[in-house]
Amino acid sequence: MGVHPIPINGSEIRDRSLLRLLNAVRGRKISLIQVHNNPDPDSIGAAVGMRALYSRYLGIESRIVFGGIVGRAENRAMLRLLEVKIVPANKVDYDEADLLTLVDTQPGFGHTPLPEGRTPEVVIDHHPEHERPEGVLYWDAGRPVGATATMVAQFFLRNGIPISRNVATALMYGIKSDTHDLSDEATEEDLEAYQQLFSYGDTALLSQIENARVPRSYFTVFQKAIERAQVFDFACVSHLGRIHNPDMVAEMADFLLRCEDLRWTMVTGIYNKTLHLSLRSTVANAHAGAAARKAVGVMGRAGGHGRMAGGQIPLGDADKKTRRDVQQAVTDLFLDAIKAKRSLASELKAEDLSDETDTKIDLPPL
Ligand SMILES: [Mn+2]
Image 1 (cartoon, rainbow, N blue to C red):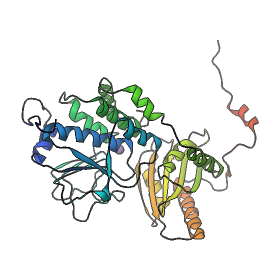
Image 2 (cartoon, rainbow, N blue to C red):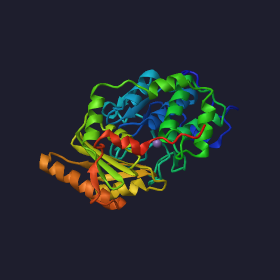
Image 3 (cartoon, protein in one colour):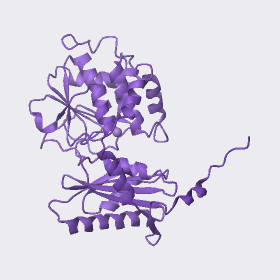
Image 4 (cartoon, protein in one colour):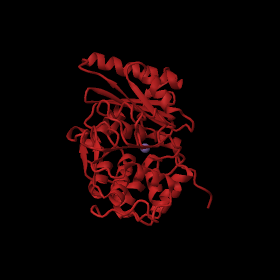
């Protein structure tokens, strides 16, 4: 592959949108595929898929570009085990590239700034449609599917294009992780794509990624998350303070939400002079994005969908007291947004283990 690309307008591609995409960018030589900052499995999976398509039909090798860090152990394992190389955004020359593709993000999204005036040629994203800038050659944004990896997988599946083991596994993990294990966040299209990828992917590899080994510091963060967790009514808030990996706030918000008494969690952490926060809810129509925007107020920005959301507040060189004030303000705004009663406050940890009798399992009669 690479030297002799497969003809675009031959008999192989039947799907109109892929034809349109490839014809719009044919002849391009230097390709960057940009994922959002602190990329998640969906953005990485989608990028890996697009890279394979460009390789096959344009005969070019793309570089996958990211900002922030890849912190989560699963995401690092995904890169390692599927042999995906990604390049930091500050190491690439955007002017030199004649093909810039954005996956799982859009121009104007705060978390993924592009160089001033650089418009991408291709945008593929499942997040609600923002504003389409002039000059984009192929735009598919806001389709109601659970993962961008689903949109990319459809390019392969609808045209019977062969998918390598690693590409299929990357797409599967992207779909699985963005839809909460194919639960209620998944649409018919996500399920169908996942099912069809199954025969190409490697589930043993996928399981290795999902059960990635973690460093000892991981448990320190868990301990902090539990120790600092405060329960207000049906909501739990935990401020982790300084963290080495911004992904931990989302992971801890998910973890704390497993507590049977909770319907909402919010976890914050400070990374790179920024307060990162993550919201999770068990409520079906939670509008977590709206709650997150209320929680950051005018201090920062936030977004999300359904039962998950995130946000950032720049802290600059704020001193300890100011940082604490910000955390308190975020807590208050969050509790107001979800109408949780502050008067009903307690620690997350049960006082003693006799509480276990409250959760005794009712076994079905034999
Ligand atoms: Mn996504």
